[in-house]
Length: 185
Image 1 (tube, rainbow, N blue to C red):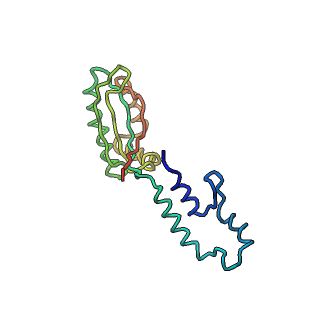
Image 2: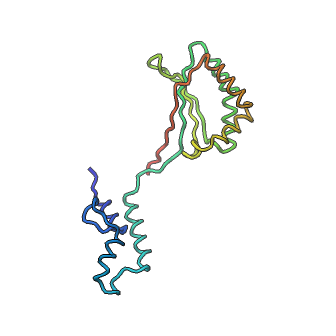
Image 3: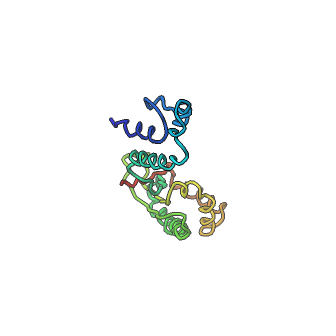
């Protein structure tokens, strides 16, 4: 079990007067009560704030995460019906790949990959599509920009939807998820 000392030390150093982490009282509140009984020269003044901020950063740095957030990858789970694999690969090469290249050139994604899998049962995907974004904001907040690039490469949204419906005849999107790389220190 991890020691609570760094957390308790951070609370005390960051300006909380406490006897336990559950009963923390901000130091300015504790000081306001205690200041009534102290001479003026002993009271903490504004000149002490930078020193306190430095101590707070140092205490929090000791309790920092041991990783940084890395790129975010959207993983799509696809099941292509038997006998249609070549047809799906043709679509990936003719339409999907040029769209991904345009998105990469526009700086919206940093990479993309396609994986073939050997499913353990009929209800599992046999294709995994990965689209990697710089971070979560790029993955979740760039829908308009992504759609704009897709329209320029593939065609109108209506055309794209028509083609999606055609592909449902031989492939099923089983779901998707976003995964984030953790860059260890």
